[in-house]
Amino acid sequence: MKVGRDIVVDRDRKAYEVGLPFIRGVGVEHKIEFAEKNACNILKGLLNKGKEGTFDFAFVDANKKHYKYYHEALLKLVKVEGAIIYDNSIHFGSSEVLDEIKLFEDGIGIPKKKSIQNVHEDIRDVNRFLVSDPRIGITHVSVEDGITLCRRMY
Ligand SMILES: C[S@@+](CC[C@H](N)C(=O)[O-])C[C@H]1O[C@@H](n2cnc3c(N)ncnc32)[C@H](O)[C@@H]1O
Image (cartoon, rainbow, N blue to C red):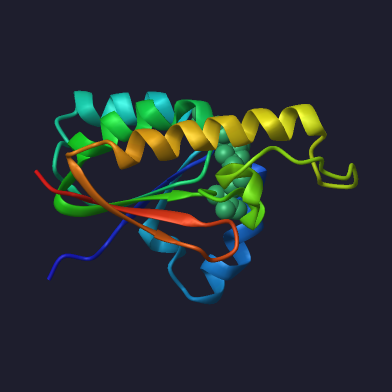
């Protein structure tokens, strides 16, 4: 039987370390290969190594501006019938992504209005792009930040 393995990529190791106690808690650290690198380079490297169609699953939670690039690479790396999941599809559960831009209060951990507008625009752009991509079947899960589940169709 093949044992599942994960490649986890974040250009900031500290972000990975936030989850590390939970990873250790369930005893799966040995299954994870962590890369403190730019995700675009990792994906390009995997394609260059001929890893097309070898992944069952990908989860994407990074800078929204690169999501289209990730999508193209992942559609090659993930096998047909495999899953690609995108996080934050309704940013903070906010209607702003779905509807008009509203004012956000400034506060600790809450981005200012201009940057949140940009993020919302990027997320809307990604959502429109995914909806119109015939290579995938998609569904949306409206929990918290929202996730978009994509299945590679061919
Ligand atoms: C919202 S955080 C998510 C962190 C982690 N996935 C989690 O759920 O706790 C987004 C992460 O994407 C990382 N990131 C953004 N752009 C990236 C890129 N081009 N390559 C690798 N990591 C990137 C950031 O360093 C940041 O830690």
